[in-house]
Image (cartoon, rainbow, N blue to C red; front, side):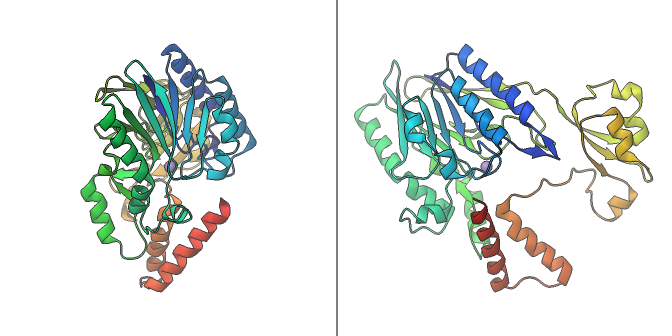
Length: 384
Ligand SMILES: [Mn+2]
């Protein structure tokens, strides 16, 4: 069988204040056309369908049209950006039409079987796991690692038992977690005194023929047969390379081929660096498509009306930064490096701790840090 693996659609996201809806619609059309052309047996959406737990009506409408037009079954899980309950709405009814939307965690995992020339391929659905949501199901684990292990227990046992009886049985896991090399995860777990880490050991995925992963926006394998498909569009200048998905073909047991598939955005993402006079010189502007999404890093020491001058030639100017004597002295830029992306909620506690220390010259006490974590956690829960 073969299926198209995509993830991190983030429908409805605004990037630097720009709506990505038109880009998303354009990409999803390509996904549908490609799945039809390839006669894919399924489309896998590995989480973060929406950008927010309360998506806008236009984002919901876009996903609705995508699901309605899908030429094959769709297998979807919720990611950390999604509301599990909202993604799971109507799932029992949709499943009858081949649309499998697994929003909330359930144990044992929801599964879907496909039969090909060799036998059964079973897809296990693991929506984004937080220790606190697993605890609501009776899990006693405190860490994400232990919660994921606990969630996967029956699926692992079942897959092993089925393979023992029928060597043609193949198991696929759909998950949305932060997987890293075992030793990296272990080192992080040792480092963190208060709270936990969201890193999950890559060996957690052993026992599955393929893991369709979401969460990391860059495409690539974490090990043989465990791939992040990356986000469907760049969404940042750090990740500006080709984006799309993966065409996964599972033949006889142990035979998995993975082929990256690029989709073409309406506008490319480019970072330009130099003095403003150079960047806005007509011959340089004409060098690329001026309607690309532009992030300009200006090296001028003194410049006036930078935004207006750049926006006049680059209508999709997303951001401006300076890499000049002043910002270098202030340490804003380390050698022209781009600024860090906005952190996810999970790391806001550490960001706050840094901020506090800079403001006050002393670190937060453990109690204070725990209080901040609780406030951020409650705010996140209230948002969901
Ligand atoms: Mn995510």
